[in-house]
Image (tube, rainbow, N blue to C red; front, side, top):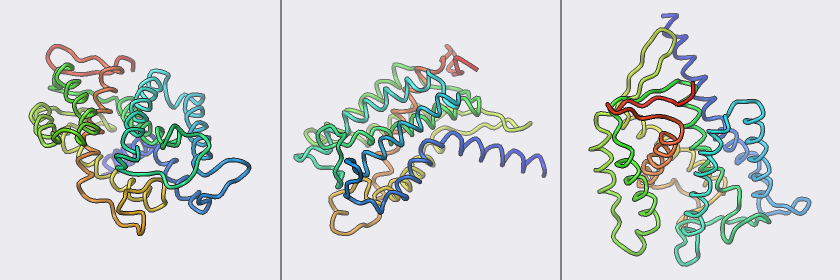
Length: 267
């Protein structure tokens, strides 16, 4: 019983540590809500969130809570996310909007926005290291990368050509059906199927999205006049985004062996 309690505590502690970037951002979203669209010393709420996110990133690196290899993955994900954000918030698309002003922005997107996606990349990168995760029966990287690239493109192309998300869902289920995640807690060897883990993570991010929109970090068109819960359909979008992030992290931070096992490059 004591061993089980220790394992649960270790799991929770490592999960909170891995999600530290995202947790700190959510706390800031809540605490800065009262700033609204007001200017403070020449800057706005979104600008101060940018400064805050940069400080977090520097501290994680300085305190060695995040490695430079992990930071490179996160930076790549940040850039890809900003490109997608600029496209999807364009007035002719307007999938969502950032309702408050900012000094530091690119077109319609405040610069801090990329850090919200970086928090997802940070979670995956730190989780793999903290839990010393390995994968069994992982699909080949060409297969996963094509799926990830098509998922990324589909976020934007669906406004001009048919949406293929259901084909992407089916593809992901087929190739990851047998994939298992392995890690150790105390003396317990844990093995979990990958797909349910991704589904649970998508649900957690959906909750974070509801918190973010409630505090007007961004808003969907139907939320502008009055806030309401984000639709369940967004779970699918987060699932595909998680897949994209995970594939990038796995490719850069680890090695897939011929039999389909994956391990971290650095322990």
